[in-house]
Amino acid sequence: MSIDSWVNETLYAEWGQRFKVRRELARVQSAFQDIAIFETYTHGRVMLLDGVVQITEADEFVYQEMIAHVPVLAHGNAATVLIIGAGDGGVLRRVLQHSAVRRAVMVEIDGEVIRLCKTFMSAIAGDAWHDPRAEVIVGDGIDYVRRAPNASFDVIIVDSTDPIGVGEVLFTDEFYSNAARILTADGVIVNQCGVPAMQADELRDTSARRAQFFAHVGAYVAAVPTYVGGYMTLGFACKAPDFDQVPVETLRARAQATGLLGTTHYWTPEIHAGAFHLPPYIAKHLPR
Image 1: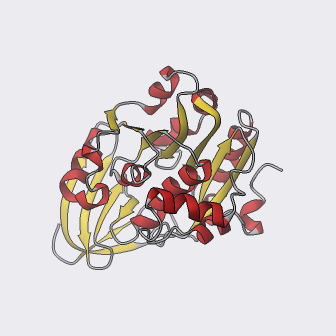
Image 2: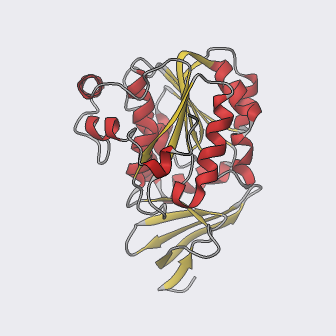
């Protein structure tokens, strides 16, 4: 790629964003998808999968902190965490910041994503790959969940692409049925549900599917600048109530106990509690 060229995201046909590129670092067609990593003037290094922005060094902390810290802290006593996807290692890193977590299993289907992120975006995962509590598996998350023992995880975090291509199977009835089976009685599953201004059907359909297997279904929001279209929704489903009603002071005490308080760039106890108060245009897509 020539210096000062532009890369256009291809998520939507009629609307999008583009990045002025300093240099291309990697372009690989894996067995599953096209992977591109390039260096920009404004957002540091950026990774696209099949032409869609997955992560940028400039704002990765927003998404990573909210998809990881919210379920672990709201649960309050999570010892075992399953991460599906998240090949850049950022979610794994945040999960392992919680001292109570004694086992974090990460299952990423595309080993090339892990390899390229270790090579070109290593700061995102930091030392997480070498933490003795981490078990990193290159494999099929659907198959892993299908085979996992009953009640073997407290938290499941699904950091996938949108429900197209390689990520589509992570939004099925079979997946959510097995997720409910392998979660503990007070367990919770969280996954990205798109930007409702442009992808309302993703939040609506995913929430309806989860409601078949979980008593409590909802969503919370995070403002990620490079996920264009406004708020990103993170859908949750759990068996026990009150996941979305943990008091600010309780969250503060839990974060303090694990050494997290004061180390984040987006998550705070107040942001956590407020993220569940949805604007009506988003809330209307959730089960009543």
